[in-house]
Image (cartoon, rainbow, N blue to C red):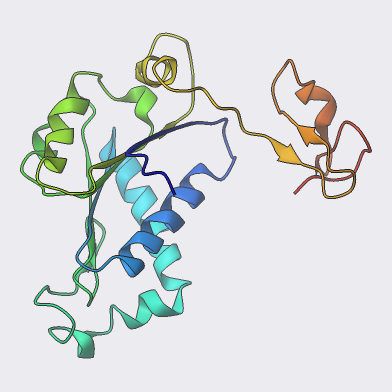
Length: 208
């Protein structure tokens, strides 16, 4: 598989963006021993809400994650301590994630070592802060950056990153007729939206 160090997800509201992000973080934390993640949102309240509603829920709903945070495993798989706090979660395999915020200043994220940084609600973060925070990846062999957010206007940080990306679009294949549905204006997304969800434009079946 090709190694891609930089991703951007530009999504509408309530599309499962935070749900997807939290699950991918937990997957990395469990499958890559010693990996260190950093989550950055614009505001403290956003960081706390994400930690409580999404990341903590993702950990609690995963049996392996719960086992790797059991205190009786501390010191057996790595020298790292097990942490269970709003701003820091770590596991017996040495992996961990720190959560912070940086709307007006990158100072809170300075000096935190990371193998992957997730910039959430990137549309509300300052462009100049991103490279400063990204310095946390300097010593990592991974150096992965993920940018997620919602495009409010065409004059913000997420739009600048989107314009520099490959601009792939989200598509959905129908389980009934195998037609590819592209949920944008050119793809007649308004005709796809029904009371019970998104429907295939070709056969009318409910899309997954």
